[in-house]
Length: 424
Image (cartoon, rainbow, N blue to C red; front, top):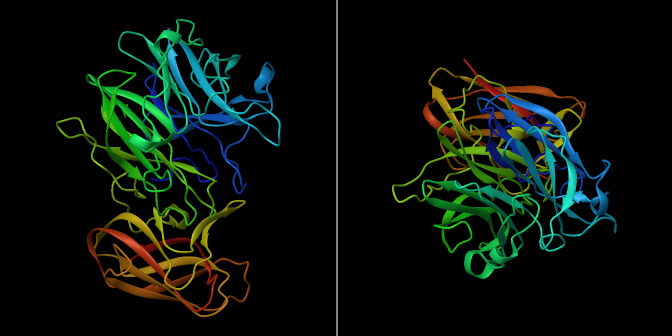
């Protein structure tokens, strides 16, 4: 279910790789919940053997660790990692923090295992101080390729030491913003004899799309093909997207992130299964709450913060252990896709707090104008800090549907909603 990691974890910019032990590993940046900036000084690694249960391997790398050299104290932007000959090579980039650190730093570090810690830090000549967001790819013949860049993607073959670029192979304009909508965040994969270049696409005005291009060589040329997923609508202030595609046990997935906190920041990784057409093109997918898990069961207690779409003013907030939707105004909505209704559910309950006046939750199928199942009344709160259950009867529904909660009332900040569920 999306987001795929515990709701206390804010891991964006994810690259996913299945390694020698058969597990799928996630490498991403690490946002600090509620802060008004991207990323932090640390990376974490997570892994799974079933795409449902995730192991937190803890801090894998930090610019506060010993041996960081010119990168010491910098903010760590998006990373990538690859295995070669039993070693794991982490590629990272840095940004300035409070005037300290290396802007657009590009470096690498090594570990004997996929989760680190990664050490033996080295800058990468020609890429270091050039641009952000490294991506690493090893072809079928064992040749390794490094990609990096913003607005204009650079790429080159690496020498056998995995930290030096073969300058003769350097391509400083693989794709660019004008011709491909390339903003940043490249990621390379191969399927059959086709190379897939995934990237954040700003053609719509903001880089909320993960788009892809296809080619027959790791350094291009690449033909722009389409959009895999767009995270527009996940938060009122949504700005960027960054992720990857990966095959795990025969199924392909797209990993992407969503914003929270009515900000460009506090981002969390999500995943959707993807499929391919006969010509190799990728079918576009939508954001869902269910992710890879199949339709949701109505009786489960749903965290309101797992909404896959929010409209207007409402946004996901987290204070301590409390996760909720706040700042709801008349007509705002939260959508959860998809539920499997079986005609047995006759009631709806939500946990809310902070209602200043009489308000309502409309329970609708699919969208804001969809079939109305019921209306849950929310009276003014006697204690604005106390979570309270409110319930109502609903019409019974059948089949697979999105669930749209529409919030009604006068004024702003009507109430906060933490959880909800259906029952017989």
